[in-house]
Length: 257
Ligand code: DGL
Figure (tube, rainbow, N blue to C red):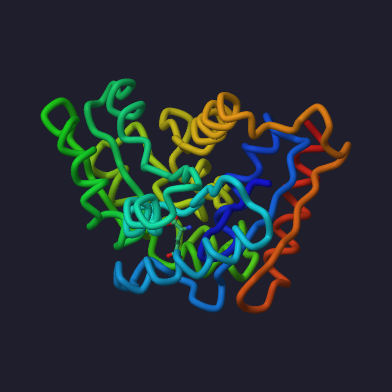
């Protein structure tokens, strides 16, 4: 069983990509929405939530855990890997590399939470490419709250997205890295505001491939014997109404492909 967690519904954007390549595994998705957003919380708080959630997911039978949250990955993945060495962890990382390697303007924009932009994991990664491209950053202010309310497009979403995205576009960014798993659910206003010459980069498809590559040699894939339909248990530390709605959208989206 694959355990996945995030501060709320953001990780469902990662689950969507995972289901495209591993549709027949069993999943338990934990939305820690009683403590959302993680973006402004201390690393120690996020690590402590990571321990509690890891133990819960393991008690459900998870034999691999995807931290489908950039903020939690930055704060907690190395601690969790040390403390729970029997279970492999897959984490998120803002996709600075593909953006830096493909940018034509020489400027890339990163949208992420304050926690991710301060994490040493991100700063180290950024350091590798900073001499090749200019990297401009902005917190997606209010983005997580929009997605948690299920507002994925429309005039309110447009206004909020514009305020954080325009400063990056004004600097000349032609690649926008989505460094928070909630943000892909705002792809409609983000793409509209950025326009066709700007590429939006989401690391989730690469994370899904990595998950497959880690599971295969360990014999953790059960795809052949698994159920016909996605088998997903959704658990939330708060009210799960919004998560349920977004999961329905994700499954509809996959079925229409
Ligand atoms: N979805 C999360 C991330 O990828 C966390 C957002 C938040 O709770 O602030 O960073």
